[in-house]
Amino acid sequence: MESDSLQTLYYSINRLLFRIILTFVFIKMTTVNFIDKHIIDINKIRAQFPILSRKVNGKPLIYFDNGATAQKPIQVIDAVKKYYEYQNANIHRGVHTLSQEITVAYENARITVQKHLNAEHAHEIIFTKGTTDSINLVAHSFGKKYITKGDEIIISEMEHHSNILPWQQLCEEKGAILQVIPINDSGELLMDEYNKLLSSKTKIVAVTHISNVLGTINPIKEIIELAHAKNIPVLIDGAQAVPHTKADVQELDADFYCFSGHKLFGPTGVGVLYGKEKYLNEMPPYQVGGGTIKTVTFAKTEYADLPLKFEAGTPHVAGGIGLATAIDYVNEIGLDAIAAYENELLMYATNALHNINGIKIIGDATNKASVISFVIKGLHSFDLGTILDQLGIAVRTGHHCTQPLMQHFGIQGAVRISFAFYNTKEEIDEFIKGLERAIKMLS
Amino acid sequence: MSIEEIEQEIIDEFELFEDWMGKYEYLIDMGKSLPIIEDKYKTEDKLIKGCQSRVWMQSDLKDGKIIFTADSDAIITKGMVALMVRVLSNHTPDDILNAKLGFVDKIGLTQHLSPTRSNGLVSMIKQMKMDALAYKTQN
Ligand SMILES: Cc1ncc(COP(=O)(O)O)c(C=O)c1O
Image (cartoon, rainbow over all chains, first blue to last red; front, top):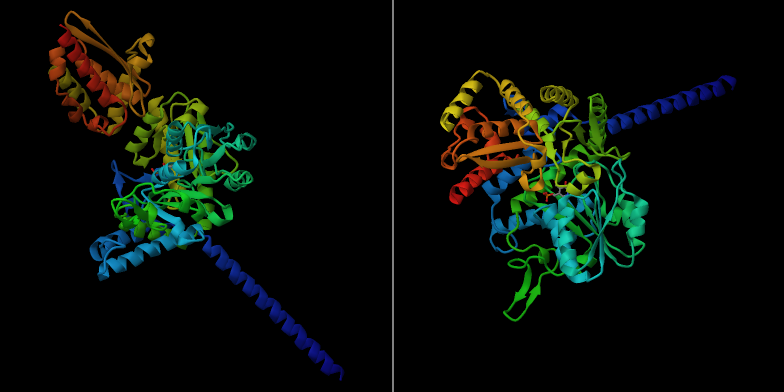
């Protein structure tokens, strides 16, 4: 009897131990899995970008100008090539097989974008030429419908010219007023000032998600909430954001969200405008012509439904397909992994730059993407960029299409380095050496 | 010396350098050693707008020859500017208008003169020739 119960106890302890071990193994497996998903396999990735193995001025290319445009993985290049070699036909208008196949492929590309932005409907995704084109579309069509004399439009001091000029022109046309959210010296929006600018006269707010110069990640969710509290729609310029972060338009409740394919490792000449159905339906077409109509007589035209209403003419089919391929590619690596890796590069480079004599980094927002602009006392960014180029290092110099922002910091221009997930710490080391060499030559 | 002779002189000087470093260091030195425009001339109306570096230029006619003075805020551009002034200044409007400026190609700095290069240098040469034309027709 006694030995029996001892036996049972022994078994139950054994079972318990076994369970505990199993649980540990399970936890271990899942965490390993979890970590695996967040590691960038840099050698594998770099091998997928053919341009990264070329030489510039006799030196291996170090490409730190990703903010201007990102390089393309072989998958994207192949998708574009395949389209022209094998699939080329015009979309939405043919009965033949090629046309039907490619129409499906193009509409699938739209769905890829929709899922990526988590838009409610695929027809809320309009293919454009790029961010600039998307913003112009909204400024024109939204402006035509909703903006009148005395209305106000709010942008910010850190906007790219592409998110200033379309609104400035609209204001001039309509006699509306452009209001500008100021920034502090760290390069962050002054949210109190923004809140004060919002009024019953405000008809739209247009701000950037991430600054192309400062790297600042703006609190767009809060910006949108504050505007929505007064029933004001918000357009977000996502050009610099999509390569680094996930943008969920429903979670953000953004009314318009714009980005360019080429900064997201896709082809040039294609971009996206996401717009809420309720606005897009009300807005008049931007450009008109083939593809945008239901019926045309010389007396009157009935326009097509979304999204075709905003897609006049033959679109950049290869671009749309290439962009969808790029989105799939980025999602396979994972935007969380990308953000974590790029943040490491950002910290590493920022620390290294702080040791350079006479340097001033423009923009040190708490919430910052992997973009660093800087000036070196007494030296011109053009000279620095020219010497770095001789060393095979591609950086951006000048005013970065943000002259008002340059004015805020009292500078003519700056050097900008901006990273993508294929950049490495070794490249940063080389860049720092190059920069020191350039400074020595120029001083 | 004629314009061609000065160009040849510069080509000979640059032949001493084997790599880009030497050339650029020479250009930088040239840029540094030449305070080539008086500050009072560094005004908006003398500014030749390039996208990235700014170039100021002033021209005067003296005894039938044009004297150019110029400056830039970027030192490499300033070196190029100094070369241009050295070649074209102190010549007649006709000579300036006829100058081919082949030396830029020969010293391996053509990249600075391509029209896509936004350093104001191309605009400066254009302005120099336009000034020459203006002085020529004025006489
Ligand atoms: C913040 C921002 N907005 C808009 C643009 C314009 O993009 P695109 O030239 O692709 O239209 C850029 C590109 O540099 C940008 O950085």
